Image 1 (tube, one colour):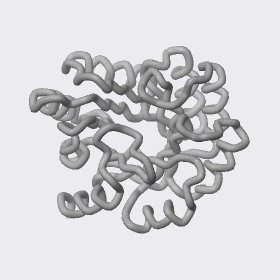
Image 2 (cartoon, rainbow, N blue to C red):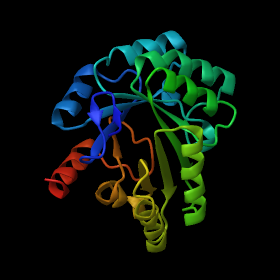
Image 3 (cartoon, rainbow, N blue to C red):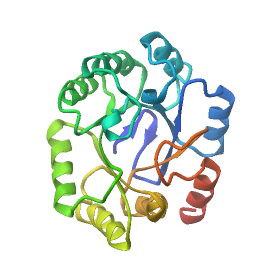
Image 4 (tube, rainbow, N blue to C red):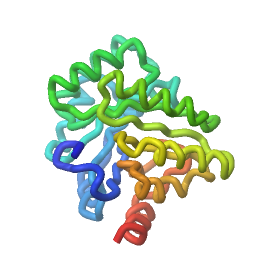
Length: 233
């Protein structure tokens, strides 16, 4: 069974809380005590992205399953530096996190990030984001193959849902690939249900936030945990 640190994935829905720098340690501890399983450090959205500051923020949550994410602005993130700088920052955080998220489209650096992570036993989430539309089923299948070929442990596909057909298309991705480790999310108002229903079809993680949402359609921590408890008693 795949895991992120001490958090095993697949047996039940897992909740990741996205946080920025400066987040109060007590607030994070309360989120974990309330039922969240891990934190996603959205380093790309940190106010200070220097290596020393980033490491200080990451290390203060030692012992908690942590995903380190430095998402490019090209896919809706806050990273606007060079790819060489981003690779260097990933190299710095790898000894301190249990998982990293790197885009499938980051062709200049994702091979190196995944190779370095594998050597250190860090779980890799290879992600794809489309904030405008839901890709075709064949395109999603190609993304999954690409992620597996790269050596990623999990492939994450997050796409904007505009209609019932879009929602059904994302549902089919999970139904057609039951043997793959996937996270599939519909973004936007039409995709909100996916955050709670897709785990029943095999999506490994659902995401929420502290402070400010990090993606369209994210639901608050309190409501996310309430619905997970109702749907998965």
